[in-house]
Image (cartoon, rainbow, N blue to C red; front, top):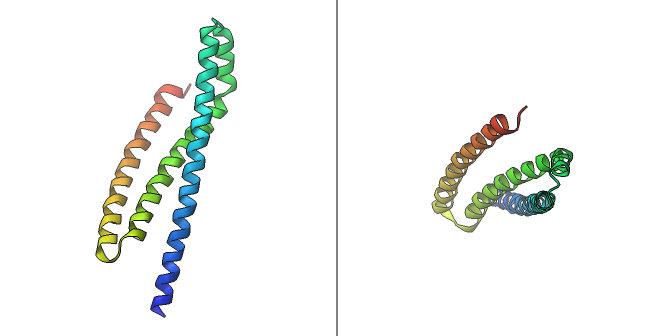
Length: 128
């Protein structure tokens, strides 16, 4: 019976890893395309001397920047989750828990720092 429970837990971890990886890729792709397009059109407007239109474009695309930013943060979080799950699934015995645990702790610390930077940017740069 214990073997069946372990197999079920491993299958759940495989499914969670695959789902996390898929969300990571899609969120990163969305963020990359959105920010690339926004940068391209912003630079085009400024390069043509259309500063007034750039300001209008910047205001009109605020929601896309917000969604792109959230997608970027989601992709980072999913990447960290996928890394931990893949370590746990790849190795056996105590090594799986040691490697997974170390990367999980490092991921939490990294995410904490990134989250603090994002909050500072949001508060200091973008709040009106």
